[in-house]
Image 1 (cartoon, rainbow, N blue to C red):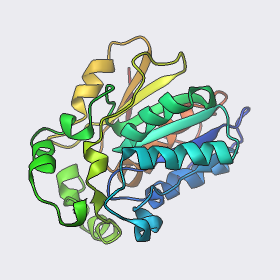
Image 2: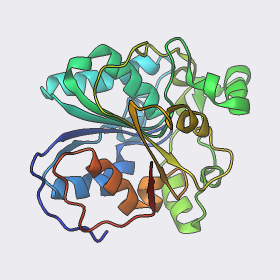
Image 3: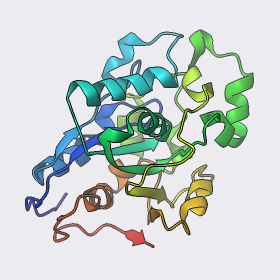
Image 4: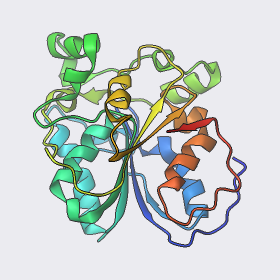
Length: 256
């Protein structure tokens, strides 16, 4: 990535949450660029996923993953956190915000689910949501979907990423969210990856596009934007931090 590594005036602390089947590794390039800018960045893998796949068991729920992030933030004594959730990670962001709102300085839903309290991921996933509920899943774990379904067309990238994916604990898709009914008065951003068919995230983009409390953006790429458009991804995440110098990134970014 050709970015100008000019330190920001006010470094921020980022916690980047990955999506289903992935791990913290998916944010590696983005995290590297943010650190070059002087920010502190955490990219944890949720229990049972990524480098913590060996901890998988049937009892893992959305609450488990919420605890992962809450404990990270509290044990590391982080404050004014820029909390970013991608895809399923948006479910986790909403729960974390409800648990420790005093530690969160800004949130970004990056092509992600934004649940209402009492609703689960399956409620927003259309036909896939019905399948999650009705099919019998061995060991209560859902195998990863083909990446082409998410707009990834690069065969080499598909091969490289697919072999790193692991099964997702089923109950993370079915446990209802504990999101706040009224969100705290901190910056909220929504990013939609607009270049693939059948996205379940259009509903959230449409919901927040005319909400003055949200900053809404699109990226002209598929769901794995941090891998297919790393420059645009970095630019949007860095934009959350006041004092960011825009020289050096030029992704295909559309801002409202």
